[in-house]
Length: 259
Image (tube, rainbow, N blue to C red):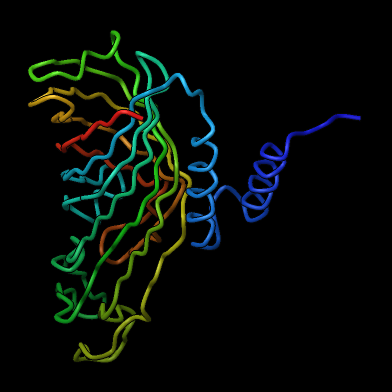
């Protein structure tokens, strides 16, 4: 009989529960559960790893591909916790938040088939927000420096996690009206796309130590989300945005401590 360690059993139960509804999570509570689970696992890592740290950052979050047809760039900010696994590798647990207050479709017209004229929806809203939990490996090109002021090094990063997003479109004029003149108060039903989507990312960055144990971190990453936003045919969006893709670039500060 195979003896499965208790932590592995918990991981298997977690994965199977998530997979029951597909690779996209159905409840936001699993984000918190996953974060607590991994943080607990990290706490038992090799005692030889002596450095850990915390950080904060601000990035420019730019939707690309089909998602970029609906939303422009927006700020992203968050915090991270990192643990030194080896002289060239450490694990980073990251939370970040982004909000788009005005999507591109708000300023886009549609052509009404009855009179051939273009109409703008005067009260339209297109918003999106994301709460994200990511787990990243930072792979340095050489052993980490001494953590002293003026040290400098660069790294590659690969990671995965979940983006819990909510995209909403409201008050767009109903385009299938048949009687003239068009009634601008007759609008489509609100369209809400929301879920916690499995996400992967890859990127690169540099760390420069301003003073002992305090580094400036600059990085760029590309994210692919297994989520989608439905189309808006009359506004020139014939296909849903899937997968959802983002490119971000930003800077932050890292504060390192001895364990």
